[in-house]
Image (tube, rainbow, N blue to C red):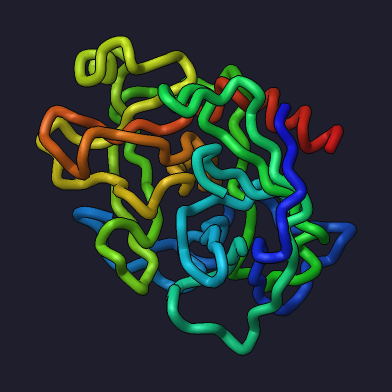
Length: 258
């Protein structure tokens, strides 16, 4: 495991408010139901686990809140903002916290993007700071089956350089179709999503952001983390994500023994 103690420029902006410590908000739920290239504007609080990782106030990639004190992102990127909708505007309800440690997966390969996952530990639990606009996404068990064709969502500010958080629907792709697009570049720790005709995809600036899918119970779980791809929304080339089910055990190990 690779652990970093980040300099002071890594911060976390949170919304003021509190969740009762004895009964923290359940994962994967949001305050309301509602129905990136090919994306549309998100509404405030619609994707409450979305994080913006920033350096000196500049957005570099996305992330997802998975517990009161942990954010997951891509290892190839690392101030984290939660509860944020507009990139260039501060909210009077925001509060800054520090990123205490950055844990990179020990097997991460910079060339292949295999094991492309990082965990960011906050210097204090987020549930003491957040309103209902920020909640964690659920972690799927390692045995969770991701069915090809399942409709999921990707969120981020992306290559469009949009100030407003974008959302786009994508469908999970079978391992066979994923390998057909990229060949030997695809490993068991990777997951493809998108459409063969292209048009809808996650792009630069969305790296590290969440790919979430909804269970029949209504809860949203983290299926993937935006990792890489060939272009943005190109026909025959899907977006490639870090497959969370293959790394759930590592995530839990780090969180349990920080």
